[in-house]
Figure (cartoon, rainbow, N blue to C red):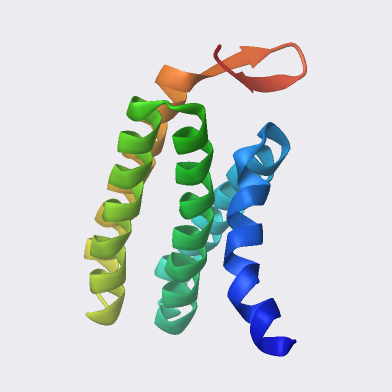
Length: 131
């Protein structure tokens, strides 16, 4: 039964993000993880940065599943760009390059902003996905 649980957990995690509630949870977690990554870069906590990158990848996988389930190719493409933008952060962390990691994180933030500009709109009580 433990094996079944381990094998089905990733599927369950991705299915959670396919709905809007799971997507919103993933986006909140991404925001916190990116803040943590910035703090870990500034403090030169390289192992913690590596954990942040791994956690970000898991959250972006959920976001990609959400856009894929909606059939939104541009959303999938932008999410894949965000996932690809994690690699330079990982590499800079491995090299313990503060400047490189900060630049790579800014690159990821730019990718996120592109997606937000295309798919997010402000409402009186926060944000929602553009229809």
